[in-house]
Image: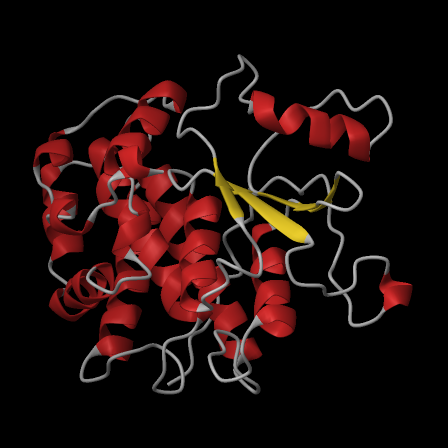
Amino acid sequence: MSITPLAAIPSVRTAPAFRGRIGQDARSGHYAVPRRYRLHLATACPDGLRIAVGHSLLALDDCCPVTFLPAVPDCPDGSHAALRPLYEASAHRYSGPALAPVLSDDWSGRIVSTHGRDILRDLDRHFGDGVTRIYPCGAEAEIEAVERLCSQGIEQAAQRAGREGGDPAALDVLLTTLDELERRLTGVEFLVGGQLTAADVELWVALVQLDTVHRNHLDASAVHRIADHSALWAYARRLAAHPAFGVHLDLDGISRRHQGRCQGLEAAGAAVQILDWTGHAADTSRR
């Protein structure tokens, strides 16, 4: 069964400031050389968490080092001060926020990309071992459909459903999406092709955000209906136990980041935790 994207829900993602790509030869400007590139990630951010998990699945610690950033940006405009020199070196008179994630080029001291999904695709394509692939050949369309479904049917729908006064239509979209994913995961281990792919990374991060962030703004009845997807949450728990997933789960950072950015009101669903993530969460003090 294929996953159908929910095109009726408009995207609210902000276009990334930089969208360079790693190429296959010197003419690309950013050709693939081990240890030339560096990731700058805050794993309390969904984009950062996705990339960190994918980076671990591909075992790229030696090939592409990671600099982990604080969960809560240290500048009033939401910037990470450590990223400001990279942004200013990469764009003349750059005056926007210095946001993570960033893939930088250590040779030039400039940014290659701030687009999370492009970054992960390029790491998989050019630096993987050729055996472990999170974007396997022939699965791209299905993975892209999962990306849209998670963005529109979970992330955006949950945000709208949790607004003051609620949005019943958005809650219906969210529950319909979870119903479809529940059917998809009943009796199978992974979403696409019987193997662990970027689609699983995408959905797992969306479920982490749903339970640790969006749940706080939903009523208890809505949260109980969300929790009533046993195959889906068993899948989330199973992936959390995988060494490439749970090690990057910064629960305290997610909470502090949410509190620093959120202007919504806490609802009764905040007291109805769906999963106990604490047994799998990262010890960020070791970074």
